[in-house]
Image (tube, rainbow, N blue to C red; front, top):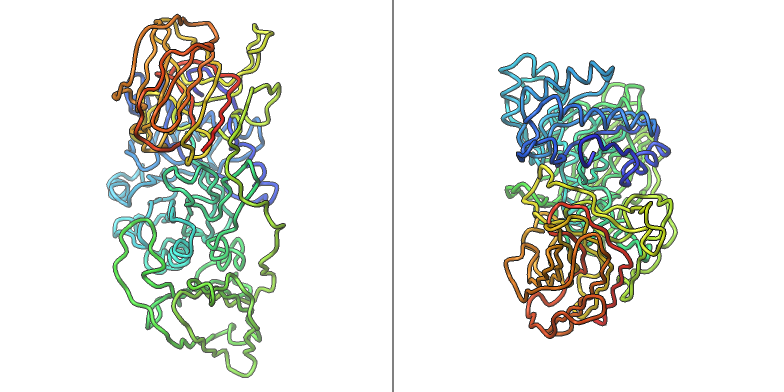
Length: 592
């Protein structure tokens, strides 16, 4: 709902993604978490709790729309990602969910730290009752006393967010075990997805888990914040190249060998010379043991600070007692991280035969290893076709946005940093500009980060230095409206407010401006041009070496302005404020 009374349950890719996940696992859990909120909910304030009923209504319409339009049942809903919670809002949300017949939708709070939500629940019996799960982000495998006292399910509801190198894999291998061992975060035992948008959407296997990894697939430009912080990488839609990274196989040590209804045994803990082990059972005789010996150097997560510990070569002996002592054989899966010459990812080793050992076995353990020992015989590394070779973004790229029935609402390869750019059909324009790309937010959202006051969508190769950007633009707001095209844009995401580059602006009041930053503080040139709203214009920005020039409708407006910084960056389009504006016939050509 970009503005009041605007309901569109087909924009974005998230609906498609949830349905694809359900096709693969009908029991997968769907969770929603607001990161930002539409500006109209704040009634002029950057705060979602101005009208509690209105904000709850907004969230509930999303849940109801998911079911009505896509037959998707949302299982859990959060409050506000890593930001303040409002006790009365949480209570109102629960009451309104129940009123709509959504009693089965559970509430998670507060997706920030363990406190103050835990203490607030202990002091407020109604709040304690309406919250089903306490979710903490990046808890460092530890919880606080108040969280335990609530006797609620405790989740690490966002974790990992570490570059998917072997260090990231080590981070994941360590926290998947130790979030339970150290913190008793026992609700579930699987990881899966957070997709960042106005709503974060989580897809989780329907089984016990302790950790939600952010994010599953790094499918955004690598130079954006948290580049490659996904369990795998697929950031080249133009080439189709992807990489199944080591964290995928580390997660498989846990996720392939448990099923819905499994639970942890009490005999879990730390190894004598570093590392940890957990054991899980289905209660029907099956057993899975996961052992990790991740070193401090190779298992640092991006946050929080990890106190030093030592892991060294050791022999560990395990004794299976009770009914488990009669297990004849355990399948063995193995991962070794680190040096390429000794590195293995999710390799099946010879089985352990226990018939004559009275359930006793020993393992030799080195640093940075993972073992899964299990009665299940269903494990498999699987295979996939060799992906296409990695290719840089095309140096010549065009998009006329002439798509009558787009599969998704956004155009390919554009990455919106602020604002929302959607395919648009001009019903009253049968000519060249019938199909365009339109910026559709008309007021600044209730922001999650230090967002910009402008809208901007980036595209291309961050390494581009010399490039020409051409685009038809249409200002819809009289007098105050403005649009830009840009090159060498060097920042995005939570850093977008400080983005530098070369920005060529035109305004509906008949002026133009050339700036060295998105905020407009660094002014290279300004003046008057024959521009008004409700008319199409063609802008061209030429950046070569230390100089730049700009053209309007084929005529130079300014030439050879020195631009010494930045040396490279993306191309971009955007608007002066949160306003309606259209773009068409985008064309970029980079020579270096």
